[in-house]
Length: 450
Ligand code: UGA
Image (cartoon, rainbow, N blue to C red; front, side, top):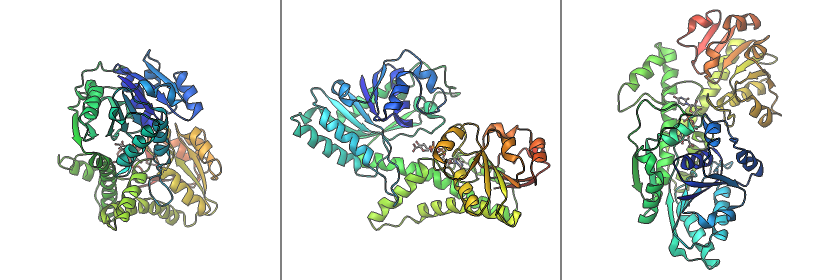
């Protein structure tokens, strides 16, 4: 099939590349000319395991900044642009609206084409976009009978985006339009039925998944996305709340999470306590859900509590550091990890950055290292007062305390004895519990987990 994806961020580029890999003819469109140039040179605009290798294959995958170059022949057009938070928590729909405008003014349909919203959008936005595109197409003299619409939310994670794209738990297709459903089912069929040849450049799961395909109406599909993300976020907040009590009562939170997770109804995932959740999805989607509820005068105390516990988790850590050092003014804090989770270079909305800012606002100097995120952090946080360090040792040199803020595997095996010698005081706050089961390696430290 002929496919166009508008947006070449995490969702757009992984979807485009995976669809090309399973045999479709795909165009990736983005307004960012720099990104498109990189992609034309087979270079991924983001750091994602296996993506460069996938883009290097001889796929039918082309890139442009000009939608009119490819939209006319498309069978399926994905809208996969960002919906970041506005200051009041609402999702910013400017990019999806602009993508819809572009489709509306360039497409004069002469065959069936399904327009699919993959971006995470508040409930009701699919319907609004459909109306807008239909109006625009009609005003250009286009025939609306060829237009079909569906919501198809995305569940991939940064860092394992290709793994999640090729081996998903489920597809959700929200549409009342039979043809739209059939087209999307046919498009994804090799993945739904797991009949494609497993790519060598990503680690395959031990067993192919039993991928489910759920058809719903558009509103339910939109809500499945928010309800899933926020459920995962509140699972983590719940683990963090329990961990706080366990710290007072005694007990081992790792064992408690393991024990809870052995119940299949609970499942072992997203029960890891620590500094809390960040990234471009959970914070934004929990605020957007609260904002949607507010519009209807409906309270969501569980979601609000998950957000509050997540904020408290970060403040609690800063207070623990303050109590231990008595004052933060003039103290040097080594920060290991800046990304919002390991295996990504994404430092946006990172809990590590939040605590660093809090520490700095209390007068501390933060010397930060990250194995993958330094380059991005140096750009995004250039005016925030960080001392960026090229090695954990540089960060630790002369530090009054060290915080592990992202659980990068490489930190487990650094020379902790050397780090200990380099520090002014060997005080370690393991905010991701990376060393919890390896305490012998950090035996010289005054150790606090979370
Ligand atoms: C999340 C969802 O997991 C994806 O299913 C979804 O498609 C995506 O958002 C999205 O909406 O686009 P992602 O933001 O890449 O994916 O990251 P996660 O792996 O879910 O982690 C989110 C945060 O939770 C990270 O800061 C991580 O450190 C934290 N976390 C995760 C914990 O603190 N404890 C855990 O047990 C798991």
